[in-house]
View 1: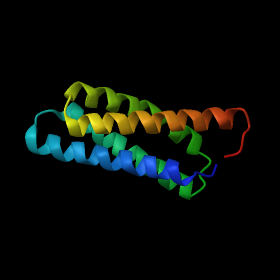
View 2: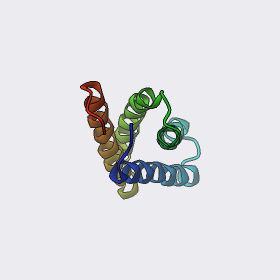
View 3: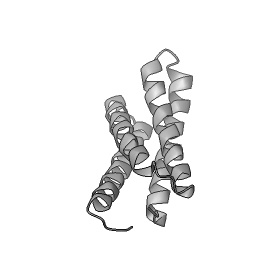
View 4: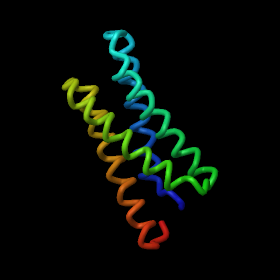
Length: 113
């Protein structure tokens, strides 16, 4: 499975948006561990997805599927926070989740990307 440049950009942008949320939460609300954990996991899985793609891993599809779940969870939390930085992150998460869903759908029916 080869990724196009737009998929790579969406993944990196999402990971960096999540990292920014981690920084904001760490400074403003050090007690909110569940939010922190979700954003950090989302960032980590995005970078893991890119690494798996670069390595042409046989597990890329499974990592993408896991990534979708974490992206959706992260987006829900970000929308709940209702702040500009968090809303941008929610949008990035939803966009990348949609791209991954489409990618997995195409792979399932045998279309090579």
